[in-house]
Picture 1 (tube, rainbow, N blue to C red):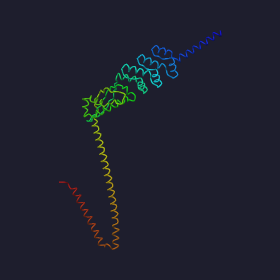
Picture 2: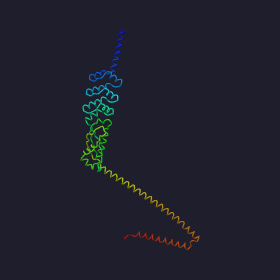
Picture 3: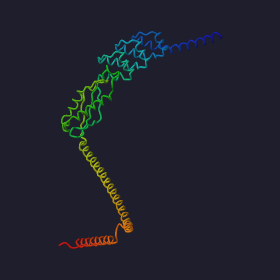
Picture 4: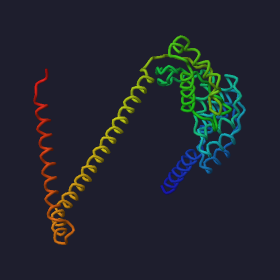
Length: 330
């Protein structure tokens, strides 16, 4: 009885050890690799476990590459995995490039993947060019008419410039700048409508794909619309601005005139006050002159007679003027 119990214990231990061994060592993956013709040892698979590398994410892409005729080494794939790259996507990109006869070494594909770009999508774009459509881009012709144009840009990925090259936003911005420049150099909007292909030819000749991750194959003007008369609007706004400036200056001159008038009135009032003060001092001066003997009584009465005569003449003149104004015209 004790011997049977011991055998059961030994069997359980053996089963547990085997389970741990098969969970740690991917024997099934090793058999698949051997069956596919990929030479890989059990020790290599165990070493991947210790290096924290998933054997499946390295061996399966290696099998795929081997079947596609690519001569890749397990060290290359493992190194790219440890660098944080997507091994399966890089291998798929290498296979696609091989089929399309595109020169794409594994190291370049790995660098593109580590740079954050989709290397498989780039290879597909090299085979099947991509069409980028711009929004409506507005420009003003020389006659002041605003013209809006929409372009379709056919681009192909440039594998050699994917690392460090500018993206689609730069292509759209450069094409937009070229369209605005071309529209602005046109004599009139009718010239743009008659020959819209001149825009694409002019823009395409500027080499706008320099420094980008793409190669521009063609630029086609998809639509051209006439907007508003910018020149007339600017002239109208300028006229309104000139009128407002003139009104402001006229108001300034009127305010200055009113201020000068008020100042003159104040000066006249001041002079009148001084005259009144001087006239008030005349009797006192006359009395002082009489007391001091500087003027005689006869001279004083002669002065009074002159003042009375002057007052009478002024009254007669005023009455004559009033009668002339009130007399009816013949």
